[in-house]
Length: 423
Image (cartoon, rainbow, N blue to C red; front, side, top):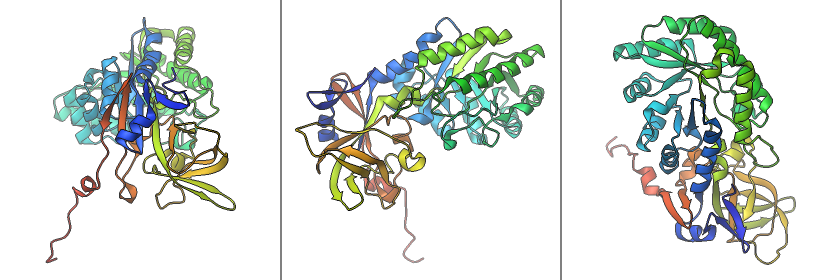
């Protein structure tokens, strides 16, 4: 579905004019569509009906409690990478029996927190982590359910910062060592080995590396089953991409069907195992946008700049990844002169930009929408330059709700203290 569309030259979120949100809440402001979030989750969930499965939303993509709660109501599980994300998932109504804990650096405290909550599974990423988890579980008198995240050395054909399945990446256990690591895990008394998993990267737009990784996973899992391991699931990770500009990723339904077909033809004994998926961006990315207002237009000899009130602290992806987001006026009025602008923020960094060379007919005071920012937008924001983080709004049909109010400068300083005057 398309949650954001023009009507009478005004951009709407579902049934709400985005200008009305900006007028009441101010800018910058993130806006999410409830209908889109639910539809995108169903796009993963529905094709899996009839096969034992678990769709775990990757909390790192967007950890707003309202977003997590909506997905929990739909039956979603959650893929977490920290104790803080575990707390958020549980607070939002997540079922701990549908939570998988990934990440390379789990602390003892985080392991205890997850064991106490009764999560479904730990995705262990090193032999050292297996030993630590066994020790912590033993101290608590528990047995930890665990799967090993395997690094299959498959090129995901994505930005190097979000590639996770190559030998040079920090994630997972080299597939050449995986069988030995499983033997090690099986011998540890406080671990219960229940699955095999991998995740090769994010913003994947081609099925070929996904299916190649699946083939490696199936080979390992079938070998383990033959050796007597009592496996319950295959965790195929997440990472399915979305369209920001010219990408053509497969729709979730086609992605699921391709995996199911491969499972039927090459799955062997794995065909009846539960399938676990960890989508994030593909559920929430297109379900959100960032509203920002033009403060100044600055025309130069070589460059024109549209200075807006959103900045790299609000949306880091362009500065971090040189990521491309469509930028469009909220109101398209009488024809204006089109110029190419660099859309930049007020932060004191040359890397503070939202887009380069965008052809826009705009004036100071105009509202702009930065599209496809539901994933890795607000969740990666910061307070750099002592800038309060933006408000977040959820649109639900004809209504909208503030699901995270704008911070105040006073709140940013509340946790800080100065030295006593006599020091």
